[in-house]
Image (cartoon, rainbow, N blue to C red; front, top):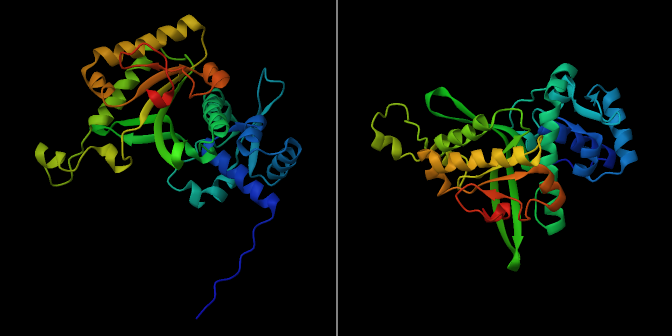
Length: 300
């Protein structure tokens, strides 16, 4: 009989380094301030740790313009290799940032997505819910018909703690919109979600629709219920953002496939600055199913 070796807990500094690398692998990029909030670390301790990981060529940074010389950190190739097989990161999409140039091209969108995650994480801490750094997975991809793919900006996992020790697990596809595309193109994203909602692949060797339907929709392979679809808007003035929300509402009302999905799947849109000011569970979400009263994302 062999005895398993005794493993002592790693030093606190090593645990902190592991957490920093895991968060950067998960979120692709984050500023020093965002890492501090995500990991709830002391500013000085985090700064020393980032400097050490940088000297070890595990992480690198770019300096953000118009942000008081703030740094946005990302993994170097050695950091990507070091984290690739970590259990908490298995099944995640490939790490897309390979250089400072690649990082700079993705900075605005990636850091806005991290802002969105932090709004949910902050609200969860204040309410006693659960939504940690690894409960936000960027760039989740799913197969659509005709070899096309649906790529969500993020998949959110959130656990509500209700009365009587009841825990409710929620999931949401999140689209982060910085007003860099037309309102019509933004709204067309709802069609992609509606196609995924109804997509039932035909297994190899089966040709009839009846046989295909017996396997169930493709989304049931990953989710017990179809996740909510949340649009988080920023990057424009109130009128422009209201118009973008109106375009989403119109698509949900007028497109038959989207309208059918809206009767079964919670859909909503909110302004990022409202999430940061009031929290995602405040009545800041506009339902896309025809209702007019703002509500919490959990009540969509």
